[in-house]
Image 1 (cartoon, rainbow, N blue to C red):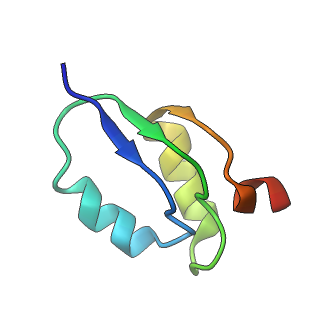
Image 2: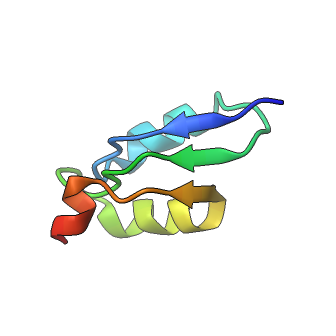
Length: 64
């Protein structure tokens, strides 16, 4: 069984979509920091809500 782990997206939707194109069909787990510096935090949050099995809050997420 495969699993995908992502972290430190920091609101960078363009990079997230580029990575998504290479992912296998496997559960996705997020290790935090989905918001922070990038220009698209709302879109990244929606992407995570739609696709990620479990998401742990990072320090940037807790600060929001």
